Amino acid sequence: MTVTSAAIGGLLAARDGVFDGPRFVLALVGLVLAHLGSNLVNDLGDYLRGIDAPDSPRAQYGPHGLAHGGASLARFALATALVLAAATAVGVWLVVLAGPWVLAFALGGAFVLLFYSGFPWSLKYVGLGEPSVLLVWGPLMVGGTYYVMAETVPAHVWVASLPYGLAVTAVLMGKHIDKLEFDSARGVWTMPRLLGEARARRFTQALIVAGYLAALAVAIWQVMPGLLLAALALPVARRVLAVFQRPKPAQPRRPVPGWPLWFVNFAFYHTRQFGAYLVVGLALQVAVERLLDAF
Image (cartoon, rainbow, N blue to C red):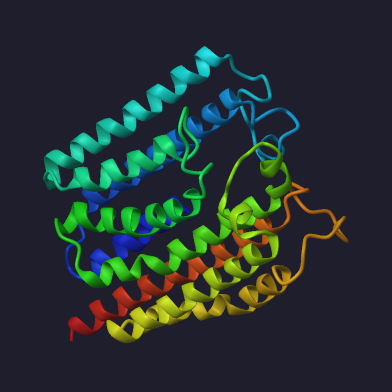
């Protein structure tokens, strides 16, 4: 998902004639390192709180060096520090190239990175994890990637960052709905716990629909018909919306990867399709406009 956000920022820069290959690659590398570092910090924080254990949902859907016993606490902390140091080095390089305003994006991302489920204070534990993800995978990643090349971010880029940011937020909502019982027993106040299970499902449906409406608004406002290619994901969206219409089943009718996680699988599949069509649509938009400019 990080690569998709960076690609959207890069393609918007290409359309506006400000694309810079080396700076884009640096931004992409920095974002990937920062995302990896965030995952490590989150795993470390939840492990220290006793949330992540071998039987926790987090340990069931993916590798967890601490919960699975594959790494000592010291080695895990060292690896986390090295990844964060590498991400910081890339950030400093971008500040040198693009100016001090890069710090605004870097510091905003670093705040979420360190405090999403970091230790001792966590955004996720007070219902701010979901808004933070919208901010990071939307304006910060898309706008930040654009900024390091253009050294400015026009209004249409901020708005164009929202469709994919909304879709990514729906993935997190799905995961937290799946973990609602587990989180409630451990005092974790995610947004689904604040809203309740049924309202959280409705809210996730609204996020998915809002992503299409935002893409349509930008397509009309900026005359970017390429964004309308995202409509090809609507059949998937329809099926996913139907899944969120009902509570999670006691048992799936067929094997589901990562079960008992349920909603997150469908939300992630939709976001992957939606993001891919956004990127392809923007790429076609840029290619067609370049071709027309040549005549």
